[in-house]
Structure formats: C-alpha cells, structure tokens
Image (cartoon, rainbow, N blue to C red):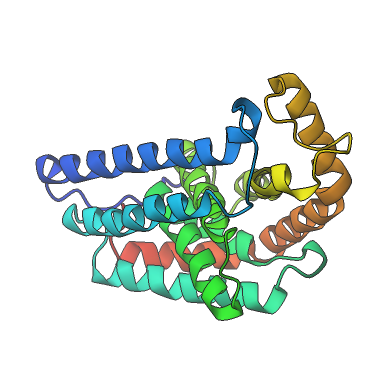
Length: 272
C-alpha cells in the first residue's frame, strides 16, 4: 500500500493563513450558493423570472474563483506548473463537453473532473469544476442564467472528489480495485446530484402553478420537497441515469491510466 503523494511542506506558518482563508472563503461562497439553489424549499416568495438569481451568483462566484487562485499562489499551493496544469485540464474538460454536448445524458466532462479533483485536492477540484463549465459555456455559446448554477454544482463535484481523495489517502492501493470502486460510486452519486441541483434552480419557473408537481410559493417544506422529487423523477431520471452510466464506464475503462498520468503530474508540481 502506497501513501498518496503530498505537496511539499515549505513553511507551515506562512502557508496556514492563506489556506485557512481559502477554506473560509470557499465555505462562505458554498453556503451562499446552496442558499440560492434551495430557496424554493424554504422561502415564501413568488418566482418572477428564471434568471433573477443568476446575476447575484455571478457576483459571488467569479471573485471567489479569482481570490482562490491568488490565495493558492500566495500559499505555494499552486506553482506556475500547477497553474498551467489547471488551465490544460480546464481546456480538455471544455473540449470533452463540446464533443459529448450532453446528448441523451452522455457527458464526458465529469469523469475527468472527478479523477483530477481526487488526485489534486478539494480546492483544485472546485476551481477545475467551476472554470471548466465556464470555459465550455464560452465555447458552446451556452452562457445563460443557468451558468453560475452549473459552475457551482461542478465545483462542488470537484471539491467532493478532493475530499474523497484525502479520506482514502493511505487506505487504498493507488489504482487498485477498491480505489476505482470508490471513484465509480462517487461518479454515480454526483451524476444524480448534479441533475437534481440543476432541476432545483429552474423548477419554480418551469411549469406554472397548475400541476401536481409545480412549485407552491409559501408551501410547506414537505409538500414542496415531495413535488420536487416527483418532478425530478418524471423529467430527468433517464437523463441522469445515462450520465451515471457514462461516468462509471469512463472511470472503469480509463481510470487507471488517467490516475497514473495525473499523479505523475502532481509529483512534478505543487498543489494545495
């Protein structure tokens, strides 16, 4: 069993402050982002437009990404080579999304995000997820009110993969069956979570108020949650399932060589 390679410790006192600030900033931004996703389940307001909350998310998210990069650079969490790696992986992920384009739920963007976040850590994973979706939206002319929600959701997928990597470090054999199985399960879970989150942001505006699965302004949490779950099952379950199957197949087939490549890149750079 081989322990997961760790970034070099240069000066604990010098790096602890910026990294703690990065973690705090990421936590605050995630709480705000989660509130923007989940307001239909707890608020008593009448939705007016599907894009009304998007500008606020952009105002929160883009400065957070910039500050996170700067904080990681200041703490030696990212050196120039690591920053270049982030750019390369963002470009590859954007190209993968352009190729697959979500046709029938087949999306290749998530498997590389999961593997890279797992290898490089939570902050790198969050940056990769958010920036990949941003770059792919520019390539596909997919910029719209849904984009900040997609960026947050993908960022959380990368962050969670990094947390999984920290959890399993030293506990599983690199590129062994248990590691690939854990990544495959995680890839399945995030396929459905991403679908549910993206349903949640537009569900209040999607159907009007005359159906059994419509959002009820001021309705109880249990009632709106039941309606939302039904809405998700009816509208996106097949799509999300295809995404989950795509993720699993990609992780099982390509996981070992991609993990090996990413780990060799990690040993040559510095990642937070």
